Length: 293
Length: 342
Image: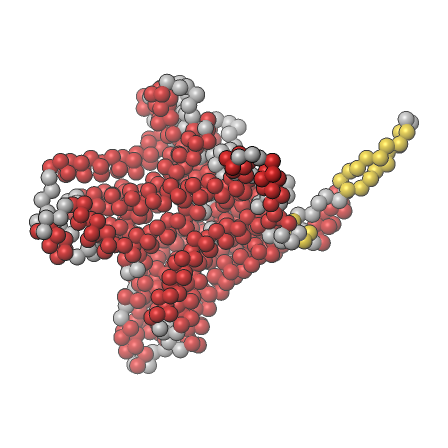
């Protein structure tokens, strides 16, 4: 949308640039600051005496002899058992993404090809399910899970996250499937394919962009979840986010808060790289539902 | 697609949603009518040379037998809904009789846990949602005017606050705003008040969490508005420029009407998300002065002694009713559109 007729005054241009720079500072600086601070000792990053210590590394020099230290990282990953938490996160994320894409593509394909009235109602029901606060669902799970003795283990959490994720995945993939012309699978059906064959060999190969977008969102949900993982997993099986919270609660010895800082950086970095790589898909995913109304 | 094929295609996802979203809602509903058992007490007669005393102690064995037999607890009907920690009917009537002015009455009521949480949740929604829409729209307009070549990295920077989980996002801000962090310490210097800190006042805590909310949600509004701006047709805009419409008039009369459906979509989604605000309260360790409905449920569920299933379930049910009220206008509109379309 470049307006050739539209002559912007210099004042407006300057104002615009300044605004963007300020906003980017607000949006990004906290992350840069945390990254920088994670290589300091606690007395510098959370300095009671002088905030400038975080930059001059006054205490870091005294305690470790260098400007930067990676002690917080090595301690959190070994002593703090963050390696276990990241392993659990990887397990949960991989399974949640795979299963919810498998269920989601099947369901969304059926919804997009059905002309019956119930398809509409199913989509509305999915919208209502999407609105449910996760914590209210968790309060429904806990008691039955305790009784069935399936509380605390990874498989339960994976299944729960897949289910919680389905409404959004369905809506997203539904709007992607709608853009694939019906004639494509209809011609396959006439040629003697079953619906499943048409889905598998004709539709799926052209659906990769949509599937990648849906996959990214499932990944972000599983990776970022706090409510479900904190309440449905036992200490041993905690994923990254509840683990970070557990570092906050135990303030008995000094290292812990810095563990949380380094854990936050460790958990955020892969996500940022992923989004940098797949930026286009993330944005198309956020907008498909919206722009098509 | 024939019904039978539809059924088999939809079965796995449908089953997952019914089992893990539908049933839990029902389970929450049932749990909300039960309360945890009272402890069974027994009288113990103790005799010593100076005489006998009767003391009342908890019968651990009988209590655990009772808990094992009926793990759901005792039936409580709507008792949990009306007790002090929820709707507090009794307390409210009491306050109504006791207090003289309306202000006093409101003060008393908003000190009850449920109303306190409701007040915070609604305040949060009320301040965050419009600001998110506004800021997101301004950022979208502003980025749209910048050269296409450098937009990619700028968009990446803009969406960062959105992609981190709320707990991490609020922690990252909290570490800066807290008295020992860079912003907090500088504020203390500037205001010349060494005791100024986030935790010192309720208003400050609320403002911080609201600012966090705007920071976290604006990128979402931005992304959607930015995409919608790409679809604004150019001819009417050009015509308006020729006719001498100012920049503001162009936005007001051409761009906004075009992206109006998207605005309602973003407003709805962000209202839904803001209503379940919960993680920032933990990230900012603000439990003392800010509690939301979701946080109340969480607090009941992580209770050290006995998990208060009934209490958590009752709050959950009322939260769900709240969501239903928020969603009702949209659902009614969709229903009407659906009926006219047929």
